[in-house]
Image (cartoon, rainbow, N blue to C red):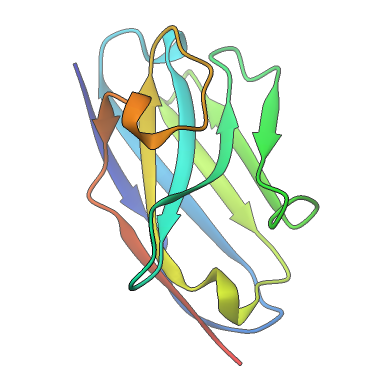
Length: 123
């Protein structure tokens, strides 16, 4: 079992940066693939980025590639999302999620979710 708590959201101007954190509590954090998803009002939850357990491999949605960076600190049981060059279309609630065994972008495959943190980008 994992419990996930996101932080770091807020209001930022277009072109600015934010860093989201997701602190995990539970066992064997490094055995989980960690991901960030987001959900804007009236839209479905969408994949943003994921990172393998060791941190060696990362994947990004095309819409954020080159602007966002996912990383993890397995000694601290935390995953991060550094968001640069933010755009108004990045406005959403951002969720971190965890899954074992499946390297996937499908939210339905993820076992554990945080409560979400709001990111609002003003233009």
